[in-house]
Image 1 (tube, rainbow, N blue to C red):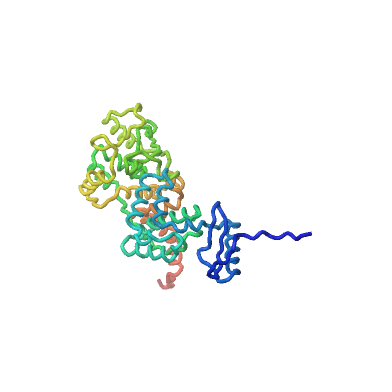
Image 2 (cartoon, rainbow, N blue to C red):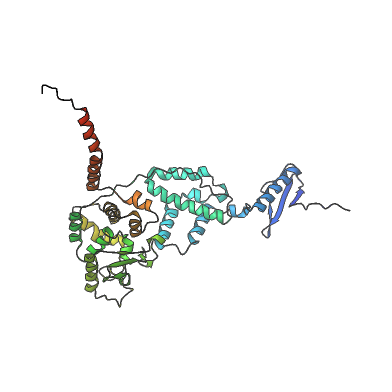
Length: 381
């Protein structure tokens, strides 16, 4: 009986030059080794390694690795059309303005971890750590997509050292300062500020607020959309950003006043509550320059950002004794750690109250100890 033999993977042939060429079929195409070999054994060893990669699901089409970084970035930008328009604009800006042309011309398979680290170090020379982090996240996502698409065997974005991002110190305003800012903004725009300071809404969430998302009688606001930079409504920043929250009665009345001034009723559920003077959706850049910045200057709060209001909202929630889970939900954060670690800041009043409580706690023992160490009066006293 003839012994069965294992079928050899691939083909090896001797060239007229005396060297050996290896090739194999996979994914409906013939692939040849990128180099020739001095010995037949070397060619068969190379084929064995390729066969192992195929069986383990690690094989990468050699032609895919020849695509350039610029090709990858272009394909990656088109790969997720459902991404928010603002995120798409940010990614495109990073790709066009921060990826060196020399790197863009490189074949994907030639890019190493050292190349990515050098790019990050180059960014760090002229950009803030937070900007470097955003730019790296973009490149990392693109190479991860290339790995998932079998364009490369392994992403070079591994163990990259990023510059340390320092915690941003945000202002904590008093109620009087907020009142002054509200007066400077006027009746049409002050409710936007209060939605940020009291409700913790992002500017895009405020600008994207529709009549149907408000229940003035119940005093609730539903965050279901946000206004993109293209002036169109889109989904909120994350799933956690979809939320419904109660607002104070006085703020609900202010919002009702804004709608009444524009002639809006419950019969206009899709109408935006806040619009530009010509009735078009707000543009953050224009609104900040024409409305917010001048009002902040008049209120002696020059440099204040609308996003600072979210920090104040989180701080007020924590300082007021609201449980962390409720604070997280109202802020639309993915976890309590975000609420406490990034946005909430200790107020001077809360810090003083904490010191007083600690003093009371330890003060009793100090008093008792002091009494025990006092000298006893003599008999002749």
